[in-house]
Amino acid sequence: MKKFKKNKGIIFWITGLSGSGKTTIAKKITPDIKKLFGPTIVISGDDLRKIFKLRGYSSSERLKLGYKYSNLLNYFSKQKINVVFAVIGLFNKLQSYNKKTLKNYVEIYLKTNIKNLTKSSKKKHYRQNSKFVWGKDLRAEFPKNPDIVIKNDFNKSTNEISKIIIKKIKKMDLK
Image (cartoon, rainbow, N blue to C red):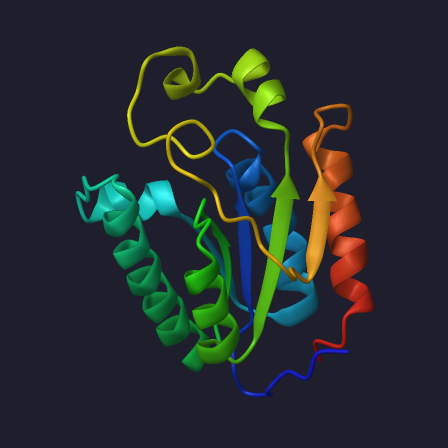
C-alpha cells in the first residue's frame, strides 16, 4: 500500500500512446477526484504545448519537457492542489524520476495496442507519414510498475473505463 503525505496534492499521471483516451478519461475522472480529495485541476501535455508554444517532438526534446511537466505538477502539489495530468510521457527515466520526486504520485497506464490505434484512431499522425510518433518511429518505454493499468481495447466506453479507474483509486490509501 502506498503511503501519501498529508498537506500535499495528489498527482494522477495518466500515460499511454497517443489516441489511447488519456485526456478524455482525465476529464471524466476529475469530478470524482475533486469530490474525494478536494481542489483539483486537469491538464494535458497538449494543453501545455499550446500554452507555452512548445514545438519540439524529438525523443530528447520530449524527455526534457517531461521533466519540466513533473516540476510544474510538483509546484501545484505543494500548494495542496491535486492534478489529473494526461501525457504520453513514455520514458522509464521520467517514470522513475516522478516516483522519486513527486511525493503523492499515482501512475495510471492506459495500455493499448498500436495496431488498433492505427486502424481506429482519429489522430492524423497515425494515418499520415508523420515523424516522431510514439509506437511508430519513437520507441515507447511503457511503465514498468504503474499503480493502475487499464487495457483499452476500445470495447468499453470511456465512461466505463473512468468508473473502473475511480474504483481502483478508492481502494488505494490516499487519505
